[in-house]
Length: 633
Image (cartoon, rainbow, N blue to C red; front, top):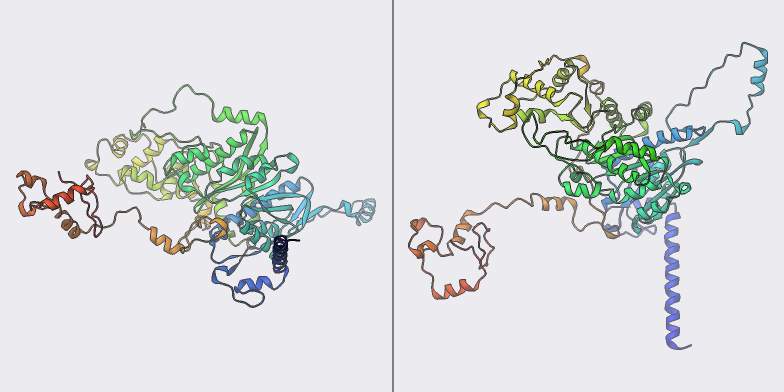
């Protein structure tokens, strides 16, 4: 064997040996009982101190305990605990419905056992004998039960497409009964390594299967009816639009699809073109933007499902914090799809409104298309609310879940969008009535009214706009607006120039105060700490950014505002340029002129000619040593 071949053989052998040793060492770390404790304090099992960037943090949420790198906050966001708690509650009730149809009862930790039916045995001795003989029922005749942490052969197959550290999937395995399997998928190798370790740490390897793949390709590979998932959870960074087409095909018949959207700036109307390219609808800037965002997402889901003769049925649609979250069931039916198209997009003989608003005279804005049907299944919401209320210790955010779902059950299901108190008052420049006063006036007028979970001062009502503005005109008469200060073309002048046809009564009614408000439930979340919002986008390879988030926020604060101008520096800078009118003999300002009245020397003229001078006077002064300047007219 030649020397070159011997060296190559030894190199390959050593490389294989190193890889094998490294794999055994990592496997030993994951299986060593003392390794998780060592990771909490940032030391290796041998006692060697690890670098600060490799230290790890342990977080306990619900029944799960996860480990993630301390230097990378993208793997855990405490703001989303409400999202995860609500998802566990929804999937539990969905499993109760699905498995109940198969004769399987689920056992939820903390819930009381179902009361047994008491039978009167005093009628006949024969019945007593038969019941005594049937006391020892065969094991196969016993009602099947599904408990948390156990594999249910007829249970739900769950996919979390973007799992990060695997916290959500691990919580499913440890808190939701009736599961067959959970696939925790992520495209990042670093994230999948964390998922494997956290699965071992929580002892749920029999239920949770880590997977490294593109979420879209994984869902496209499960389009067959026998391979579809009963539950798919998508919680991406930003928009879920790239995953929706694959998701509506990979969820089973009647399955549950859970989608989170954190790109609220797009859905709230800040970029209508971007919203149209992602969701197929134009978002408008309005006070009802949060409910509009929910209806845009539902329309986008239904539109993608219709391509495959499928349609969606919303169970619960929530706008909370900085995101929206929808839970829908997906069904197949060509007739339903066609009926949906006729109802939503039936041909019309003309525009439903005039070019200008009949009340304020302003031009109408066209948005949508939107989901116009109910966005909640109130029966299902009631089941989730009852389960959380009877077992409040199950979730850390149970109090908030009760409050939000209680407001959801009070919403008018057939009234899309809403008004806000400040919007109505600011339009006509009057003082703002209280919520109870406006609700009482609408109830006195014979209209229905409710709150909205998406906005604290929202008013949902079936009253037409003419009746609502009549109520506001009556309110304005109690505290008149100075009409002479209003422009004749302003919306306030146009609205107040019309006498109200409806005489509103603002006497407080008992039914004007909703039940959730009377009970003092926690309906609207207040920001509990600074920087309450989404975490930064994940870096390639799972690495954190070079700057701390606090420093980065301070660096980018007011970055679009122009810095304060130093007037003394600008005056000295302008004096370096000759005055064109002085050379022509027409400048009348003398020493008060901001430009120089000294005649330029030939050397200065040649130097000025050779420099590239901007042609605007509005340019900010250059830094020290700059030779360019504005042109002088």
